[in-house]
Image (tube, rainbow, N blue to C red):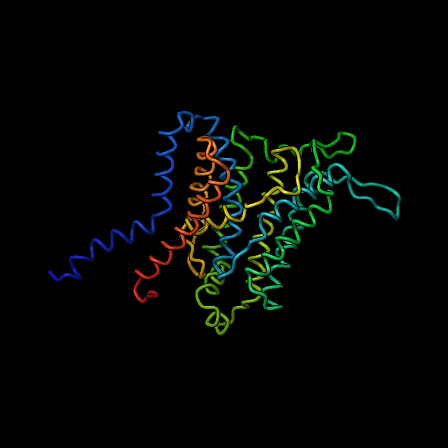
Amino acid sequence: MTAVQAASPQRSAIDLLIKLRALVALAVVVVFFSVMTPNFLSLANAVIMAKHIAIIAILGIGMTFVVLTGGIDLSVGSIAGLAGIVAGALILNGIELGLFGVVVFPSVPLIILLVLGLGALVGAANGLLVTRFGVAPFIATLGMLYVARGAALLLSDGATFPNLVGNPAFGNEGFPLLGAGRLLGVPVPVLLLVLVGGLAAFIAGSTLFGRRVYAVGGNERAAFLSGVRVNRIKVWVYVISGACAALVGLIVASDLVAAHPASGETFELSAIAAVVLGGASLAGGRGTIGGTLIGACVIGVLNDGMVMMGISEFWQMVIKGAVIVGAVMLDRLQTRMQPGGAK
């Protein structure tokens, strides 16, 4: 037996561990916090964690489509904050039709559709900046991060929109159900995650659009030469990311029954960490929705566990940053271990 043959099983085991890093990390953090905090696995805490995981996962799903094309979206947290503020403004202030001298208060379903459309529109702006104007995704979405956050502050004048329960006289009640309601005992955000995750997994794995997303991320030039409209695909993945971010903003505002312009800060870090931990490559072309969901579970458990242990918020940011760096390093190691991988 040669040295290469002897080392092969060991290398295969290491490669398998790297590929399953999200599951391994999830098992580790669950066991650790279960030992360190007695109430960690209680039913009440599990419900709270499930809602937090749903928020990270929905953001991560939108981010996954962007990352699969080799892009990045740093604006998702700000879009979520803007979405909450717009929803709050529509519930409390309605839409003033100056021409007719009346104020219209949209119903909650219409508000949800309008806000999701706004998120998709901001995402489309990101996509156009990247494709039509050639702005690097990092810079384009970083700029949009400030634009969306500034817009939220302008709309609210820096204040919070409180008590978003609606008014029976205006027919706009029911908004809190989106984030705090339950259906058959299951939190609505978790059900929304199941719906969004299932749809996203189908699109990514079983549709022509999904195959083209992977093709663009794997080799953009080859995809273009084979007839894929690369720019259109890139715009659409940012639209998806923006809509997912807007949905998260609605869920957060609904759960709190209030909207604050600073809501969603650092959400982009959790989304990126979930995507990378789930096995996606920041270079594009590799990643799955299922992997992102597992990565979101890791980040959600880690966040809640650190809070229950009383770890400082500053240290929490340090740890999450370290998780992102570690996940990227493992991704590079996985790439190098593959045949023909980068050296």
